[in-house]
Structure formats: structure tokens, C-alpha cells
Length: 93
Image (cartoon, rainbow, N blue to C red; front, top):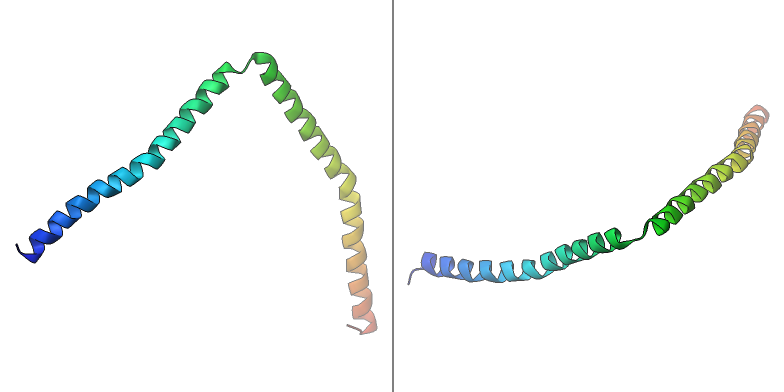
């Protein structure tokens, strides 16, 4: 048997092993997708509506937090800018 033939046989054996190793994670991914799809269909409309309501409430809270914190961040940046300008005018670091 030549070296090339031995290499080809070894590659064929490795291809089968690689296929089997890739088959298990692939099956897990497809199975997880299938289960998620079935459970999503089984969720009653009331629960879906509750999720939408919770999402809207979360978005409202996030928007309110942005409105409340925007002036605080603005004041801090202006204060820092003014302090830096004052240091530049006075010649300090």
C-alpha cells in the first residue's frame, strides 16, 4: 500500500467520524428549534398579550429613565467642561 492510498483511507475514516461528531450537535439544534416552535404555538393568546404589555411597560420605564437622567448627565458634562476651561485660563493642569 502506498502512502497516498493510506492517506485516502485515513481521510475516509476521519470523514465518517467528523460527520458523526457534527450530527449530534446538529440534532440538538434542530430539536431545540422544533421544541421552541411547538411551545410558541401552544402559548395562549392571553399570555402573549401579557408579554406585549410587559414589553410596553419596560419600554416606558426605559424612556422615563432617559428623560430623568438626561439633565443630570448634561449638567455633569457642562460642569466638567467649565472646570477644564477655567483650568486652561488660569494655567493649571
